Structures are given as structure tokens and as C-alpha cells.
Image (cartoon, rainbow, N blue to C red):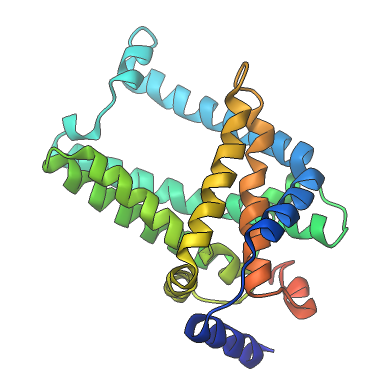
Length: 262
């Protein structure tokens, strides 16, 4: 099974693959309709937890009176060298520790696609599997790359460049997580393969990503609460794209439950 998957990866990265724009969006939307409510509630839970955590830290660090002004004017470049280093380590650790949540949304999309039951708790399933290590490493590497370019752009007084590079990194690494949880790939290998796969059809994937982002942003209309329930579409799009390029086999579905490390 492993050798067969390796052959499929090699074929896709070397010879390319077919990806139809309309069909991909249609399948992604069909999948999204199945996870919209549960995924939205899961995203709401994450946002509340993040707000409570960072709000508490900010209140302790800056005081309740100055918290709003500090958050709106926050800039890591105002820190000392030691402060920037601490900020970097915290951000990398945070990215690594929250990486399994993103993988959990992929699992939710897959369970919905295969008509299996799922709940909000699915997003936490990968914390107790052997994939946690590779997901942590991948997220930490990506956070390090983004941080380096962001700081570099700030030093060059050209912050827009840093933001642009961050988006480029996110775009070319979009298939890395499913390559870990469905393809049994190591963190660095998944990143390299993702770059190769995206490069083969970068134009159509860019169009699909833009359409997906526009749909997600539609949730900002009104009181902005809707984005909680449009956000899961992003994972439906990523899952559908991956499953089209490298169809998930039955064995991979079983492995997806996760192997608890001994």
C-alpha cells in the first residue's frame, strides 16, 4: 500500500494530474453542506478558547486599562532582541500545538464525505495519534519560515512583502497536512511534495483558493458571525482538492483514525 501511494505521488508530481475547476467547487460545496453546522460550532469553540487565553495573557502583561490600545498598536518590532526571540518561540510553539486542530477539520470533512458520524470533538482527535509529531514539526517549520520573512520585511521597511510571502508559503503548503494524515508522509517530505503538486496546477489551484476565500469572507456580511459557519468551507475545498489529486483509499481511511504511539 505504501509503495502504491509512493508511485501515485511520483506520477502526480512528475506527469501532473487533472483538476476540473467547476467539479472541484461543486464537490467541495457538497461536502461543506455536511460539516457547516458542526464545523462552525467547532470554530466558535476554538475562537472563544483563544480569546480567553490571549485576553488573559494580555491583561496580565499590559493591564486591563491598556489592553485595547496595546492590541491595536501591537508590533513585535517594538520589542528588544530578547523580546522578539521570546515572541518567536511562543508563536512557533503555539503553531505546533494547535496544528492537530486543522488536521481534525480534514478528518471531519472525510467522515462527512464517507457518510460516517462525527461531532465537534473530532477536531481534537489527532492530539492522541502518532501524527501529532509530524503535524507539530510541519506547523513549526512553516511558522519559522513566515516569521523570518515577516521580520526581514519589517527590517527592510516593506511589510507588504512579508505578508505576500506568507500567503505564498500557505498556498504552496496547502496539501501538506493531508499528505501527513492520509499519505503517511514525514513533515518535511509532505511540504516538499505539496510544493511539487501545487506547482503542477498552480493557476487553477490559485483560482479555486480565491473563490474559496471569497465564499468564506461572505460570512463577514452583517454582524460578521456568519464567518464562523463559512470558514469550514476552506477545509472542504482543501480536502476535496487532495482527494481528487490523490484519492484516499480504504486502507488510508482506516489509518486516518490514527495510531496511538507506543
